[in-house]
Structures are given as structure tokens and as C-alpha cells.
Length: 70
Image: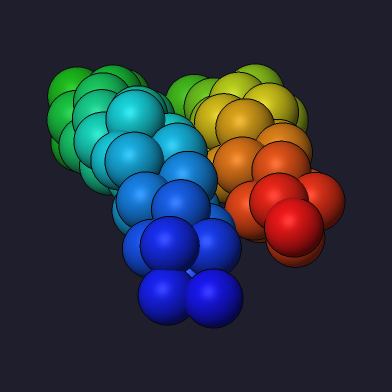
């Protein structure tokens, strides 16, 4: 039982590292772009949200895999 819990913890922990880093980079670059050109904030927001959603989907896949470990 303890090995299963460790496997689940590692699956979600390791599986969420890359999405966390990528969401941080997406937000950072979006804020940098808005700082350079504030009028383009509306055009930057939608692609930023889509990219964040796709990155977050990777973490959700890791969560699903963690729940699937028996």
C-alpha cells in the first residue's frame, strides 16, 4: 500500500513540474509583452489563456495517471 501511495505521489509531483514552469513562463512573457505594448493586451490575453490551458492539461493527464495506479 505504501508503494502505491509513493507511486501516485511521484506521478503527480513529477508530472506537474513542467506545466508549472511553462505556465510561469507564459505569464512572464505575456506581462513583458503587455508592458512593451499596452494596447495589445487584448490580443495577447486570448493566446496566453489558451497556452496556459494546454499546459495545465498536461498536469491533469498526470493526475489521471496517478488515479489509475493501483
